Image 1 (tube, rainbow, N blue to C red):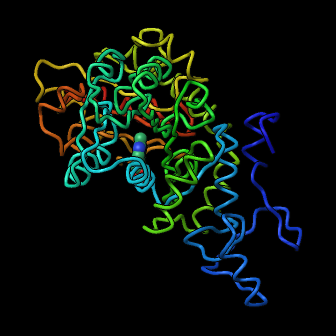
Image 2: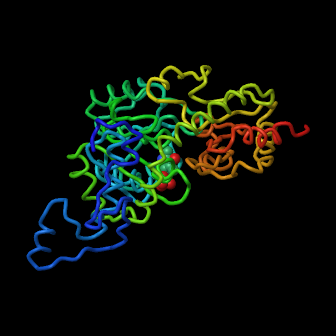
Amino acid sequence: MNEKYDIETLAVRAGTKRSAFGEHAEALFLTSSFVFDSAEEIAEAFAATGGAYTYSRFSNPTVSMFQDRLAALEGAEACLATSSGMSAIFACCLGTLNAGDHIVSSQSIFGATVQLFNTILGRFGVTTSYVSLTDPQAWADAIQPNTKLFYLETPSNPLTEIADIRAIKQVAEKAGVLLVVDNCFCSPALQRPFELGADVVIHSATKYLDGQGRVLGGAVLGSKEFIQDKIAPILRTSGPSLSPFNAWVILKGMETLAIRMEKQSANAAELADWLVQQPQIERVYYPGLTSHPQHALAMQQQKSGGAILSFEMKGNSEEQRKAKAWEVVNGCKLISITANLGDTRSTITHPATTTHARITQEARTLAGVGDGLLRIAVGLESVADLKRDLVRGLTEKD
Ligand SMILES: *Cc1c(COP(=O)(O)O)cnc(C)c1O
């Protein structure tokens, strides 16, 4: 399977490998090791670089199917699966950084990624500078002689800011720095960062690739050389491999990726249009709205606005805005109150007291996360039902 097929086709067919039984659906190879007929055969398998299956920490046919399908969807030469999104990010850092190196990162990235950069990599002498996602000049200004990695997510969480990937790539290329893009929010169904200049793409398969909130998984994608030389040795020896069972579940999820992303994005766009009209709401953040500051760029880079939006409640003080936001959350009987996203079930989060609770007030303000902000990851329910669920808290008596 290669690039001559469209993404909808690749999502259901790419990477499929059949055993001698000729099964139609992808088989689940739930085995930790593989057996051989002779000393000669096993010696040959261990001597071979890639290809032969010997032990599932190194490779497994079900995991290979997941890797090959995701590589096809992203248009990547190679992919290696990991046990979670965080282990994908960690493997990427371990494979590319040495003590004394420096990362330039967007300031609006996943909370655990900030913790990883600061607390864990910091202990090994890796430093990180945080800059604005939307200001390529800030990335250029943050470069040091020891900078090795640029790291970003676009759209950002929860304000849905958009990075100009091409512009940041230009800065990275000039400085000989690797550009890593976490493509979790859009998935390859809506955005293909390699086409915009990314050197490495990271996934939390836990989100839209599974899409049904069932299992954890992750992946690192890049050139064949990068994956073989930088990532494979880390995964082989440190061991955060993807379980074949999880790979099989995610493969099933990926079959509906394109259609889910299309429908969930359409639902989010409809909900965003409606939220804009609600008098209790100060502002709606959604890349698909023409009022979004980077709407044009978003529409260039992405197939649609995506399935995640956020909005700020009106109020005279942070306390009042927080009370209003909590009323909306507590009014929800259908939308799940959870910090997760990427599910077919819509979820609502109050970032200031959940996903962004552990960072300082200063960092929260910098990230634009006020007490009146709410994030919704829109699922596959009827939009009319979602509106009815939100109206309850929006119209609560004062
Ligand atoms: C969830 C998430 C991660 C981490 O993924 P896990 O699978 O939970 O380890 C990384 N980046 C983004 C943008 C995420 O939303």
